Length: 192
Image (tube, rainbow, N blue to C red):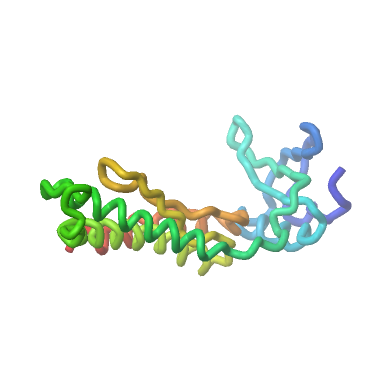
């Protein structure tokens, strides 16, 4: 059972059910959704429970209380892993760039620089995209990892990159801002 935390001033529960250890309360919001989740997030901080607002099938709000501590301290970043993946992806994209220019680096390793313009352009766009997500998330107080680049030795030389969201979004607006910031940042470098 979730702890006895006051929710009635922001959410009027009309029914309650349990799914495993989670508690689902259906009802109506008494304040804007972003305010409700911010207030409840503060009230449940440190309890080991996380409140989430979700719509029911008919579109009315429900408050899910989950027995997981999303506000726990985040593990330290493994910067060496991010750097290693970045360097490996830079190498595989340079390899792919050289192959697109008709240079096989196994036969002519001294022509590695032929693939660098392709690699640097692609990595700049990809890096800007991921850093757009990262910076927007950090501005909204979310915990996120540095980008993980994914090298592959064929095709484009990469499967892309991703960041790991390590805390819930404080609001739908924050989630939207984080989502749209990546493509916009990538586009800012891709167009020129």
